Amino acid sequence: MRITFLLARRVPDVPSPVLQVVAALLTAAGHQVDGWIPEDRLLRADRFLPDADLYLLKSHTELALSLAGVLHHQGLPILNPYPACVRAQDKVTASQALRAAGVMAPETWLTGDLSLAAPLLEAGPVVVKPHRGHRGVGVHIVRSTAQLQSLPEPAEPVVVQRYVPGPGEDLKVYVAGDHVHAVRKRFSGDSFTRPGRPVPVTDAVRDLARRVRSAFGLELFGVDVIESPQGPIPVDVNYFPGYKGCEAGVAAQIATVIQEQVRHALGAEVGG
Ligand SMILES: Nc1ncnc2c1ncn2[C@@H]1O[C@H](COP(=O)(O)OP(=O)(O)O)[C@@H](O)[C@H]1O
Ligand SMILES: [Mg+2]
Image (tube, rainbow, N blue to C red; front, side, top):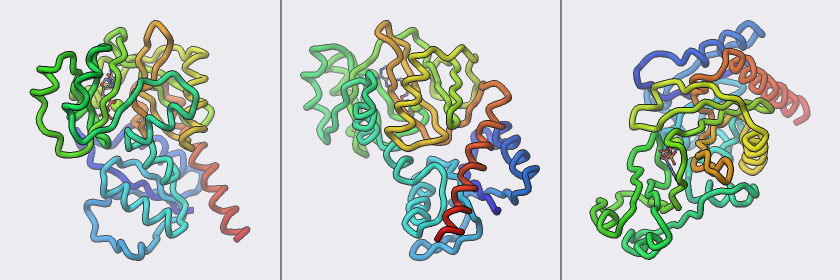
């Protein structure tokens, strides 16, 4: 089978070590593996001409997500499923899916006029974030009306989310099918370039991962969790994350999930 990674330009521009091992494992299993950056090609949008049997969406850019939509609507196999990716990428729909998953998740509001959020501050701080943001760009913790008023007029829709007090570090939960990993990492503007410290996965985190997996329909994903005194609280869900800092075995687990999808795609071809 031909397997193609739809990639994003990396910062810094070096290949992901985890992905390199995944690609090597897939190649060793007899697949042809390649990858390209959708932004670097002139692609037919009205009718995508497929050159692979399975596409792996490993980019969070708007262009890559749109392309994934084309593949999905043409009936081409793509992992994670496109509807699951869109649902996770959009923090409005993600908040609804988390609630539907029955997990403890922060209250989240949607508005085009941030001044309307002022009364929310009476109950404590909030976090303002772009509805389809990534890597923390445009995320602000707001504690006062003055601070709210000083925020620039949002160029895109924002969500306003209840701030969850925590230990000052994120728990980054990484999931590959049935396997759950967790690392602790302090969030900053460039923390996505650094691995976290692996920590044991508690039963509560495992349960959270299971619920998010089934509510979103994701197989390869990450959850940003605040470890609150009430338990693990998810604030962000990301499809196909970098798995930085996870133990080495994670690459084989990712490859297994992909191979299962390959078998599924083959079955669909034979069956249909
Ligand atoms: N509701 C919240 N309560 C406390 N901290 C939050 C909350 N939402 C986000 N954060 C912090 O801000 C960081 C970035 O926000 P996140 O929602 O993950 O946006 P992005 O999609 O840009 O990664 C998180 O990793 C977390 O540290
Ligand atoms: Mg995040």
